[in-house]
Length: 152
Image 1: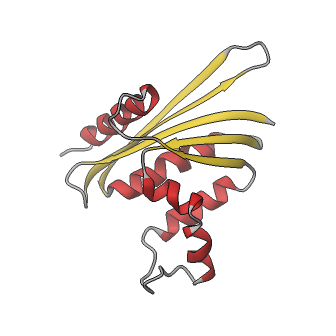
Image 2: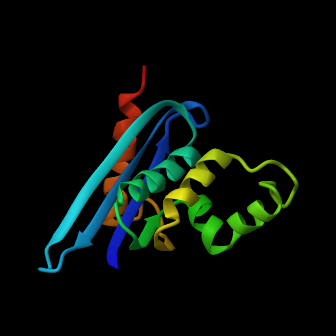
């Protein structure tokens, strides 16, 4: 199974409901030891930071054409903790309600992420944002540039 590293970040200007974007980097090393990279980004005119954090991971996973071992690196505790602290399992079990019985926000994106994740073995890792992590900084630049491009 191919190993892929997915770095992702989201940005929203005027969160909530301002322009936003995501930035994603996919990396893998081929059988000859050569590193391959693909950068993805997209902006949206009216969104939230959490939606963009989710879209960055979704976009990266949806690019993969065969089952892979995926290491996801994100500075979003919202995304990482949903899996590492099993929030997503509890939400599904409770009919997409939080522990406080409120509807889970961004349910349609969580469902899309779960669908995109199905064929893969995924491990989520949290990285501190704006702390000099090279790929996280690149993703942040991609995300903010995409958000800025959507400003009226």
